[in-house]
Length: 337
Image (cartoon, rainbow, N blue to C red; front, side, top):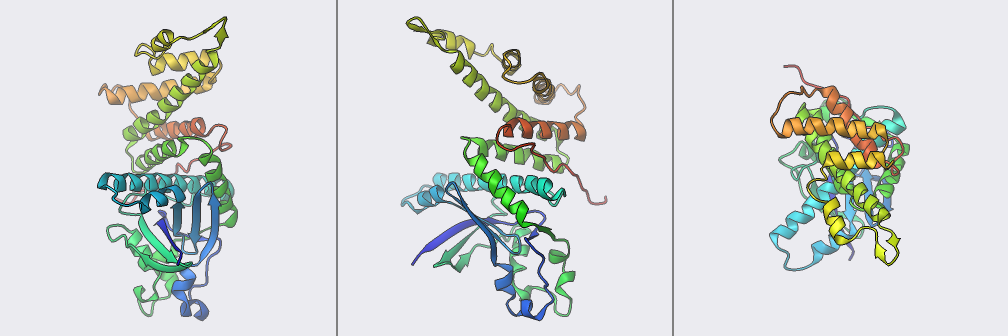
């Protein structure tokens, strides 16, 4: 017997994968649950299995994580760490799906919100057939899960009028194919998913108007990128001069000391043509905003436009050479007060 387990989540907003079904057709109603949960898109990418159901449920399986999950005598901290890594993957995939929809369909389909432990759940299959599933009772995802069963709809009301159904848009196959390309390219870069997760959290804060938190999270990503670029810069400069290396341990210690702040490092990288002047100016602006926030100076008024600009730059800076011209969905929506 072959058992496969996936970590699953619904996006905000949920969607129809590839095409919108005719929910009110008698033939659909007769096999409602089967039709709603049908896997219509599947890819195996660098050890990650991606499956997307008709009703927009995204199923993810990380082979390495699942092997770790099968080991015996796991401590609570190990289980928490595995969940953290799955949420990192889930949020990165959701963010890339959001970007793919903008790129392929030129439409802001989602209102991005971070996928949390309350939203994600585990689902198991035996010999390819559904076996069991958790239920996200503390999240709206639970309502979408129950939406797979005809008995959970109001009798006498057309299914197309139910709010879980009426607002769904279609994510086309070309968008899902682009998503799989994005995932493939991202997995080839060590540590990229972790930074994408931070970017996703930043975007989630922007969507609810927490602009200061958005800026701080953007800076975390940017500073990591700067440090990596500076490390590579020093490595490339450390050539052999006679019988000695150009940068010995003492000199390296000096060049990576506290005196070499993010401001100094970014200046060095720009003057050495590692980053462009335009990139330097954006980095410097976001750094100054972050410092104003972190130190409670409050001289700078952080606006939604500042945050949107920081997010757009951070995505481009992070995904340079990985995803061509990444476009974040920076649309905002709010309920009436």
